[in-house]
Length: 173
Image (cartoon, rainbow, N blue to C red; front, side, top):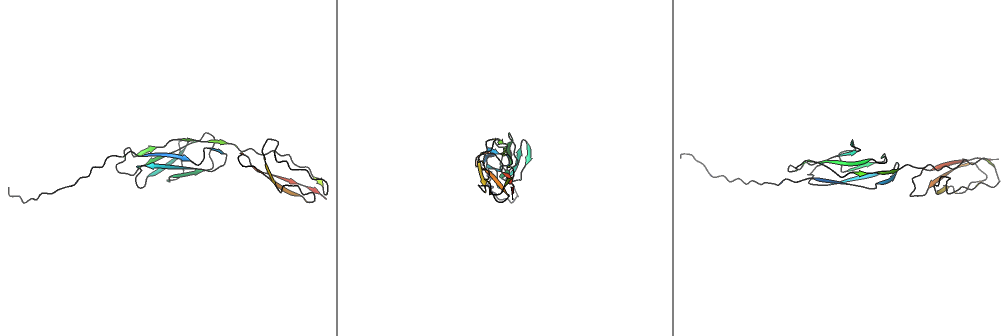
């Protein structure tokens, strides 16, 4: 009655809530001390730019990235990630991944005994390829020079948690 009005149509889109999730995988879970491990988060319903908070034993670590790399993990360390979705329909917005427990083996130091000095031209001692404490590997150079003093580097074979060892050999004139 006396009002000038037109009919207006509004389209309303209702979007259902989405439930975000995140899972973590590791490049390795059984490692030697000092080995680098990369953890990768795979998320669904995280939005266009989800936030990642990595944790080691419940302590924040890493950066806001879907990957986390560390070479300072210890035996029994537990790694997980907390994802915060920026999807406006995410409910809940923050979720926690599965946990990955690491098995870290300490490195064994080969315990070769020092080689006593010997006279030039005499028979040089042989370099054993297995240390007294069971580390196998190879030497570089492989044979002791019986005319010149020098250093010899033992490198453990792959698959052992062991460090290198250098022996200095003195050849007396």
